[in-house]
Length: 127
Length: 425
Image (cartoon, rainbow over all chains, first blue to last red; front, side, top):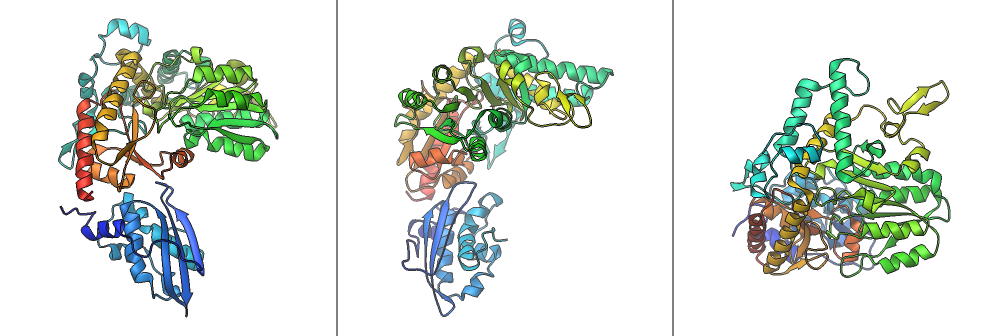
């Protein structure tokens, strides 16, 4: 069965999230939640030569928030930290490859929010 | 069904034939004619906010169209009519729950009603070393105002635990009260998540014997069961109209002596008796606590909602809620991986059934139910401390009102099965 939102790869990343867990020791970390549903997500990042050498997300949430963290984590490893801080909402939605309704937007943006929190200290929602 | 006009619920009951439960009331709710995603609407989120019967909508439309004026001001006919309808609604609403209209204050919602008490009573009566006792099953609206009060006064906020049965322990209540520091007990009449119907009359009695003032959050109770405030005898009782088939306007019922002693909550027009350059004196109850222009049409609309419920009869509404909850508790376990929360059986719970499904987040459950036009709530239900007690971040929740039927539960069970297929569970 093919669902417009819950595509096979979304469900795969939800059920088998990449780069999940803790990373000790780590250089950067941030933890936040979605006030609408209480979902929580944290990140540990190891930085080498100004790049994201490793990262792990941890927490709990819906398929959209967990799959987004997993999918984007694969792109984020190896990315210059400075570039991470410039990523916006459009980049996340593009990585996801599905249409996100306004009610699920924060689910999709939570992982970038914590990434930016860790790399820039800015806890605001990405636009 | 007869159209809604004025009159007390009692007088109306004699005039109008009783509404039969409950398939025939469905025709009164225009929203139920909607189709979403090719399916007829199944609305299972009344604990968040209930749908409105045309009697409420038409009453408000009629008022706005032909009788609108502000209340307690105009000497002209419209002002008189508006005042009469507004105060008439207050009287019927107060009588519906068995309380004095002069001690029944219109607020924006239940949250504002509780904040009114925290501000206008709490700041003058709670101090350092005192304790405010709430419970782990409270809605944020009966937590955060007390957190703010305790932060400001140096008082301590304590929680009665929710035991495994989803209930409160009266023994624990006695133990905490016996320590002698509790000044206020604030408790939900019916839990918005678990559905637990708390023995608030007994809690009030024990709290009063220990010298504590009591506040009951009745937001989930008044809409779905008979509530007699005289029998419960709490010092304050807060609820809101939008869950009771009416518009969003709240009520605070309070004990006269306390309301008279209290300072006002908000200052402004209408709540004064006389304004001098450097001080003012206050209007009589209940207007002392109703600063500014009221939500007039909302109050009148809530009067119509109360008339509607009174005509059905709250005993029958309660029985309907109990039957639907029982049916949901019977059918939902057919869904593989589903966990139910709350008291065993439907006798001790309101029309609300929270659940989770292993391998599927509640947010995704609600999204997939929506594909079949089944509206359920997902999230923390404004009860994050309770979610932590249950060991979950969120749950899905189905809740019922007069317009729901057993087929709605069947549709939910079907939608959950389809959701499991999408998730390949």
